[in-house]
Image (tube, rainbow, N blue to C red; front, side):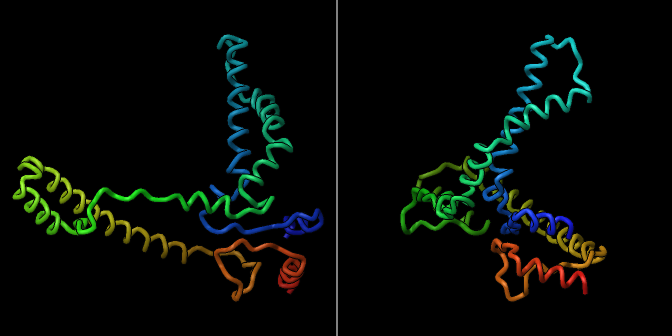
Length: 209
């Protein structure tokens, strides 16, 4: 609540980004952190070159490196660029969606060609191609490799299913804090949900209750 109160007083809009989208929609992840990392590395390189590697970098050097890197990376131009790149402001969702709409190249297969969906169908396809003279008997090694990979994949799926079930049970055991219920159940999940004044007032009332 202290954080929510601070943002409300300073006219900062809070938003939950859709799950698994920070690499496309989070301005810090898109631009600022990478700029900070590069600027920090440059500070270390300059220090090492200046003292020819004879001076050891210690904890006391951290702030002088970081502060210079911070001023270079977190400037108005980079911040504006990050929000523009993520299309949060100026709002332009098509710029982000265009990344996922790139055409997928078609496979060089005839319309009648079917990709084998099982080991048995793969063996039949191999036999057919071998009988037609398209491949020689040495290609059987590919079929055997596929059988091994398919078996390993099945085992991993089984193991993964068991691990997911274990993690789910462990999560249910953990004690959770009281939810602030930032949005109602009837609001559509999976979308960005802003904290407007009405929502913040609603949360305060729930906390007080």
